[in-house]
Amino acid sequence: MHAPRSNPLIEPELLMLAYRSGIFPMSDARDDPEIFWIEPRLRAILPLDGLRVSSSLARTLKRGRFEVTCNRAFSRVMDECAAPRRASNDEDDGGSWISHRIQASYENLHFLGHAHSIEVWRDGDLVGGLYGVGFDRVFCGESMFSRVSDSSKVALCWLVAALRRGGATLLDCQFMTSHLASLGAVEMPQKKYLTLLQEAQSGQLPAAGHCSTAGSSTGSGSTAGAGDADGAAAVGDAAGVGVLALPAAFDALLGEASSCGLASSPGKLIAQLLTQTS
Image (cartoon, rainbow, N blue to C red; front, side):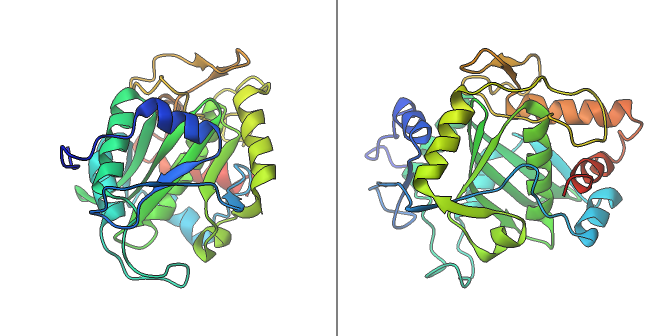
């Protein structure tokens, strides 16, 4: 555990209730034991059919420069996301809002199957990734990092493809940044976001498609309580429609790549899925 014993974990039931209500926690510094709850006035989301994949990023995906995994190194991804970084135009400083207490609480969520990570590797080194919280047909992206060019973008491409494959309808990005805007994220009032959030938790979903490089209604929502990485079975959302948790949807993408003759270069399938609708 990263948090001192004097700093109790945020109860997982409280965390999940907050996310289902459009609220999330932050902290002022890495060593700050206190947390505060955020409900932004404006919310950023990335439409799952609106990810902008540049020609150079598509080439990177197809060339297989990176190995991409799901839930292989959740704690390491959080470590990297919490590490000091150079401040950008969208940030006041290079500090981290991911306190040790927050990290330990999300590691517990990961253990319980509610939080997931996408890792990007090059020559055995972890060079990029992201993590977030999933439930029903929603994935709330928390943070991402990149140590080499395009690595976090590759992680995002795999995330979007998996979310579509498993049946998700909402990818929450919390706050808008210029980087997210360049990738297709849009900003909206919190009230509209809450409407989308409610629909994603209770609305009907078309049946998922089969192995195809077409960007159909396939997707991957992370369903709370269904975080096993064996990809065994779909789980039902509130409306009784099958939704794949992110690890299972990720495995389904790898299975599609294999059945389509792309087992050695699954990034080609991801590029095909995303560029046909981007």
